[in-house]
Image (tube, rainbow over all chains, first blue to last red; front, side, top):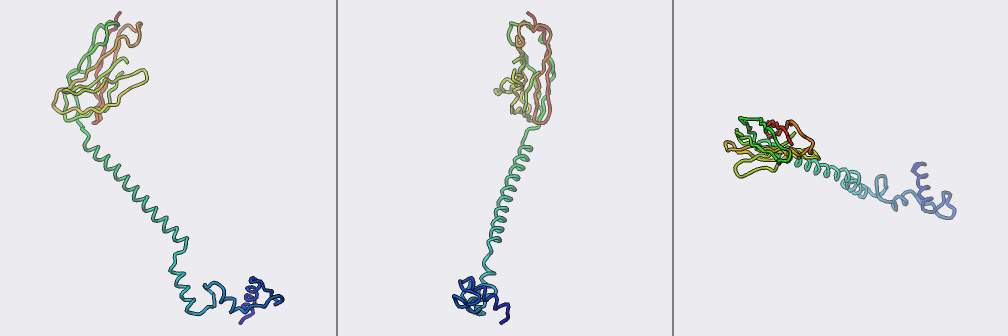
Length: 144
Length: 81
């Protein structure tokens, strides 16, 4: 056993309530301390125990990776939903564009003079006959 | 409201649309069937601008179609007492 190992053993003993020089409590040998400690990398338990611990440690996903995996899964769900929404919007826009009537209207006469109109005579009205060329859709009527 | 217009085809028609004192009211979606008679009906209220609004006036009514076409008719009158 090296001097370094002996020193580590003394530190372990101090943590357990002992004293480095042995006063008040007995210094615990390194092997005994490590046997009582949690089994992990560097523990001096038996070879089989160490191998099993290593295998378990490699199989068990670490919290950080678990969180990353969960995040990736949410990302995929959001991406999928985004693609679906964009697809629906594009689809409805394309269908709307295809099915919108694109006809035109024309009229033989596009102006009219009412002549004299008494201010107290009520509304003055006229009609412009239209020719509809292909199905059409009016989307706006304005006046000036 | 001074000048208004509406589309009529067969037994269907739009509401009257035109300028109001709060701005244009133009929302319309009216399908015109090809080959069927239709007309644009317009009307002007000569007293819309008050009792002193006497003299010649020029108005217009425009219909915008989904195809992008804008069809406009021009109206003139001489308002008298």
